[in-house]
Length: 447
Image (tube, rainbow, N blue to C red):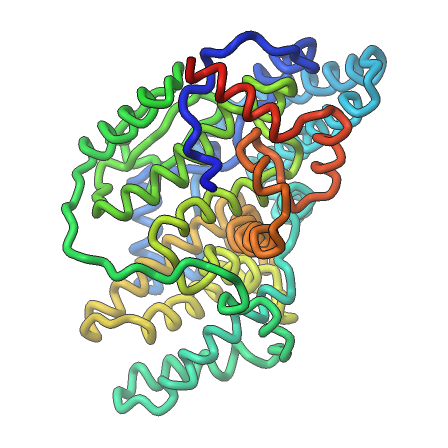
């Protein structure tokens, strides 16, 4: 069963809404996403990249122009006032508590961004861990075991540069490796085998945009815009929950299967869960319960993997980079230190000729480190944005639910929540939000 096959979701009869009193107020002040304010000017970051890779500077200085005019105080004051109103006037104890949790999370989000503006990595790191958590040690060890299998083969390479890179990794990366990683190997799960990629048409940016718009039209989803980003603000596709806007980098090109995966991931999950949630009896499911991103990352990658299969759980690079930065192996690292490890990994794994492989490895390591250390000054060991751990940890959690034949799989598309979080299950059960709500909504929409 594919929970993302449901057709138009917003034409059915008006349902009872439990949080009508609070949702519109919260949406106005709390729909922002922190990472959208951590982008920089293309020219500045390109300049920093060249200086960093050439060795002219030890660590880059990332700019955050979106924060220059951000009104932190008024937004936080509005959230605090809304929180007081919920606490004092909402009689439903479950609604009262879940909105308090969500508002507290967004206040932490604001304070994390304020820490970025002030260059305070200690506060930034603390709030990031509060919101997104820290890397799971067992999953880190599983990832490291995969890297080690690659490194071990290249320790005997006849190419001196590849051998040296493998020796550097062998010396610096495996001291803390334990032997409990085999409990989560993909082969222990009933997962679809990787499909052989045939020759496929490549889609241009405009064709990707048209495919996205066709999907939204077919699903009768209104109010969303698909925009080609010609200013270079985003290096990957970005969905703004606040503006209901889908931004596609102007340089993006995709083969047919990759386009199908992207639609399943971004539109079939992120957009549709927003729409499903907003039209459910708990509208906050449109923006997400607090700490919902582990479920969002897991379900979106699960939907993607069902199209073409996979040989490993999603999000290895992001989880590894954050684990290295935060010191899952006992050593906290800054931008430069994580970059050098990732560069060597990308280099020894590459199938390109050596010169191209090194340049590609530098570019990939730079891009990953910018994503990992955005929000910080890049110099403080251990300080990074831990957000991207949700993809790998969420993906493993979702496949565990599928493996166990959990009835929760049926409820995946009801809105933005984490199906592996017992507290979220409790909230939905307390409010009577079940998979039957999806059935009645779909039947109404197909009439």
